[in-house]
Length: 70
Image (cartoon, rainbow, N blue to C red; front, side, top):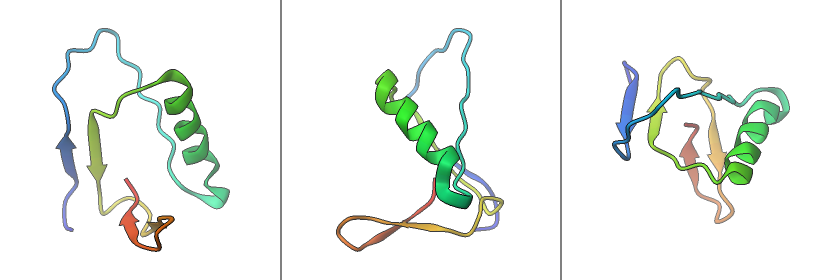
């Protein structure tokens, strides 16, 4: 991947949007907090972003397969 890819899942019109970012790092604390907020606020995913500037990591799912960090 040479450039950042933005995958728009759903078109929405936002009023006064706020972006909360939680990237994986030591202990995955930022990502865990962001995931918890998504769950508690019943947030809906509208965009996925893939970038060569993100840390070179993958997530191992419960079934043993992997996916890119997004």
